[in-house]
Length: 380
Image 1 (spheres, rainbow, N blue to C red):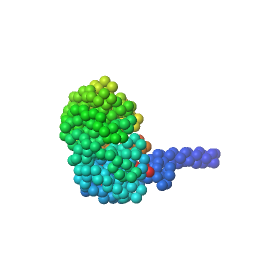
Image 2 (tube, one colour; image 1 turned 60 degrees about the horizontal axis):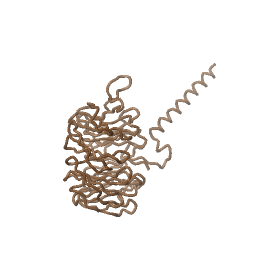
Image 3 (cartoon, helix red, strand yellow; image 1 turned 120 degrees about the vertical axis):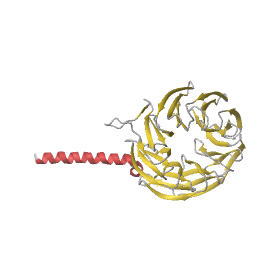
Image 4 (cartoon, one colour; image 1 turned 135 degrees about the vertical axis):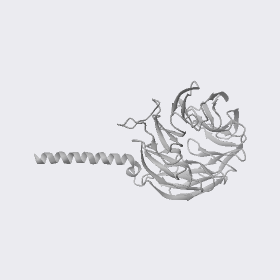
């Protein structure tokens, strides 16, 4: 009888151990799959440096001095590299993620602000808003392949999903330039909302949505016919927009309106409205479009939203709405490739918050340096 009871205890203990190992493996998958895999976050700061954070060890492990006025930071889609621009220095920079060193500074002209990669990762596109120029850079040789004139003060260049065109937002003259991605030749110029800042493009590259951070309107552009379809009226000045992966809906966040609006991208109609908090500012949508995370800068927390049912998620057992505490002035957010971790940049408290998405719970806060700005995440 005692032996049988001991066997049951050993069996249950073994099951619990296996379950525990599975949970740990899910949370720290890179280190379990291959010991040499690394999962890092890269955070730019106001003093011109990039702090490297090991997301397995949950600790800052390196500091890279890059240059003044860092912005537009992105991880390369295929290479173990982090790219960005120094708007004050007038160059594109490259960090080798394996050695945490700057391996290239490529002059592009005054005041570059953002970058985008071609779908195959072979090219990088950026603009020099100080010289009204669009540039294409070879990601392997770090050489400038082509450059061309744009409208006045181009602040963003974004490649369409099919890789055929580069869309340029000209901030000063309120136009959208459509350029050939291979030659950079200008195909068309379309008048849009004043002071355009962001663009989202449908997966079939047919329609673009252009956002201004100063206007209560959103421009809808037909990229095939190369014309403005309409300007949609919004509630409040927007701060961010996110496109559903299938392209069916566009979510526009507005701190003034304390929430978000859902726009039907097929009919171009403004639909549902959700009140979220004091000052919702930035958003991140999971790849399956089930949850949307929104940072509230006034309340210093993150709001997890069931975007399908248009409700704020609630704590299991309590039924209370589920804001997740972050640092001061949370802004930019990214996930790891498996979407098990949500990383949030807290500009005023000089740290990042690491949140477990499975439970919507705060894991830790990691200091990264003065006034962190932008964020990239790389698994390599």
